[in-house]
Image 1 (cartoon, helix red, strand yellow):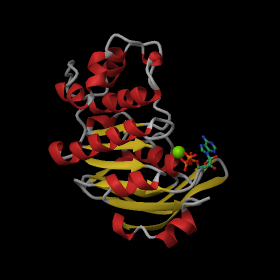
Image 2 (image 1 turned 120 degrees about the vertical axis):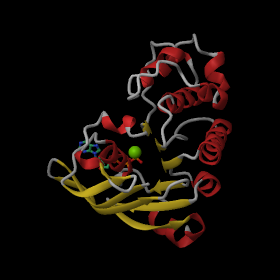
Image 3 (image 1 turned 60 degrees about the vertical axis):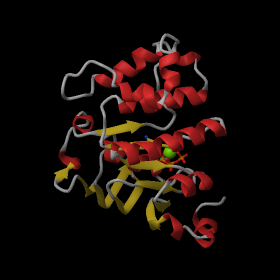
Amino acid sequence: MLNVEELNQYYGQSHTLWDLDLEVPAGQCTCVMGRNGVGKTTLMKAIMGEVAISSGSIRYDGEIDLTRKPIEERPRLGIGYVPQGRQIFPLLTVEENLRTGLAARGDGVKRIPERVHELFPVLEEMKHRRGGDLSGGQQQQLAIGRALVIEPRLLILDEPGEGIQPNIVTQIGEVIRRLIREDGLTVLLVEQKLPFARKFADRFAIIDRGRRVAGGGIDALSDALIKEHLTV
Ligand SMILES: Nc1ncnc2c1ncn2[C@@H]1O[C@H](COP(=O)(O)OP(=O)(O)OP(=O)(O)O)[C@@H](O)[C@H]1O
Ligand SMILES: [Mg+2]
């Protein structure tokens, strides 16, 4: 579904991603892991076109070369993105926040798909509340809902469990599995929490100092790898 090959990225003089490969097979959840500051978010931003890359390729759906597409093409191609830190609009209502996602659709549909409320009933219940008045967990659900209004085929989430209550983290994991099973989505997730990755991901890739150092089926995520690349 998504193939990243030999990606190199710099912030100014600082070489952040090094010959990085990542494969995201269709119909599965691939989890990118790694300690703070190793380049996980930079990789997601490179995929989304938010940071420029210096070399390498990002292919989507077999043929499409994302590196040559403008940012606004991603949602039209069916790529939804939930950035780290949620970035919802605190002064807009829940419904207005969801509507901002609609603008990115290529087909001019103006309705929020029913499915969003089915997956996150709390967004229906709270539709007139301001985004900033929601709890952290509800804001994360809103951010995911906003990414889902384009009815994506690939959903990218950057640390959706960061700083929210464990029960909502579990709910989010369950929604991810439903999206894969019932809607045929492919999911690319950044997540540092091991139990979450083990429970909800099919595959993993570990990044250490900008390089992909390990990856495979989630069962291959060994204690030795964890000790070497994930624990502080
Ligand atoms: N806009 C920027 N300009 C310069 N350096 C940056 C910029 N954004 C990130 N960096 C640096 O690039 C490196 C990778 O950052 P990145 O945010 O991709 O890491 P991360 O793995 O997502 O970390 P975290 O787990 O804290 O979210 C870090 O050293 C960071 O300080
Ligand atoms: Mg990050």
